[in-house]
Image (cartoon, rainbow, N blue to C red; front, side, top):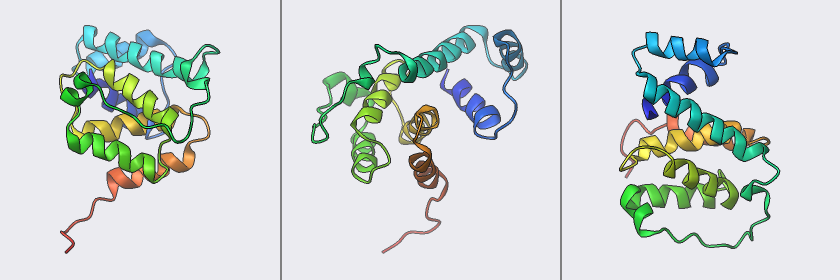
Length: 157
């Protein structure tokens, strides 16, 4: 499912290509790309849930959260996210790429993925997808793009 999400993001959303209006056409395109129907439906459902998070009047994300709140990871979250991933989440929150609200969106979206463990690379892409969908996060999106694509080419001492 995650591969489908990346495919859609890279080929349609991130590249600013035309996105098919009909879900059936998009499903057919993904089938031609070699993906399987059950995984396609899971990915499309995941994207739909992501869109619903921003637009629902009853969304828990619309509730104002205190800015000084501390995130405690559950045991199951620690099993799925390595210390490196948890540290990265804390880092991008500290530098202002995400806030506590978008962090919780990330955690909810990660929980709905069908992966036992999340790699740092996968986490970065999920954050980028979420920032793309959050209105007013254009600057944060650009910062996250820089964190993904502007990797240092050599070790710094």
